[in-house]
Amino acid sequence: DAGVTQSPTHLIKTRGQQVTLRCSPKSGHDTVSWYQQALGQGPQFIFQYYEEEERQRGNFPDRFSGHQFPNYSSELNVNALLLGDSALYLCASSLGPSSGETQYFGPGTRLLVL
Amino acid sequence: AQSVAQPEDQVNVAEGNPLTVKCTYSVSGNPYLFWYVQYPNRGLQFLLKYITGDNLVKGSYGFEAEFNKSQTSFHLKKPSALVSDSALYFCAVRDWDTDKLIFGTGTRLQVFP
Image (cartoon, rainbow over all chains, first blue to last red):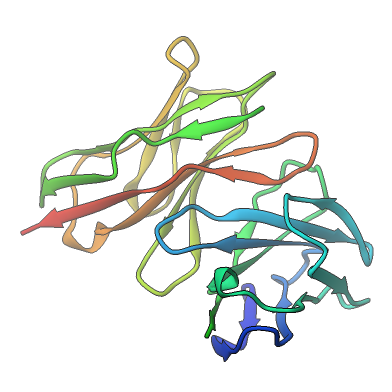
């Protein structure tokens, strides 16, 4: 039973560029949440996807957008990259939104913006 | 607003000794609390959670946590620490309105031989 997978593992971009990160949820899960973890800090919630729609959103600008596909996998897109976007981006999956189920995290994608 | 606090940036303990990593919470309504562990260059691994019921919750790798409503605490414990337990530990609370997890700042646990 595969857990949450993310790709790529590492990524280097320059300011102003755009990036797409990918996530496949744990088998049987239908809800995907994205978090940003800056160095030395706890993860911060970006947004959550369920039934191919963004359900909830944290305090992140519109440069951050996402998508969920019919197979429940998800993408996180960040436009006009800033140096401050350098972080570990974590994807978490769970069964159903607001269900109280545990969120299981992937290994993350480490993004470096130069 | 819901929040959790981890008052210690780092906890040092000798192998074989008991360990405690502290977490306090502030919520409106019933708390739904989690502990996760993060090893270097890795994602978060789920250890345990409290929803309701017994105040002592048992989780993975021999860890347990004690929920204390009067002290609004959810401390992580292990009777006998291993060097391999050295990692970054995060306490989190579920926000019932948004389903997001709100994390503490993390506590680095160092177990020395």
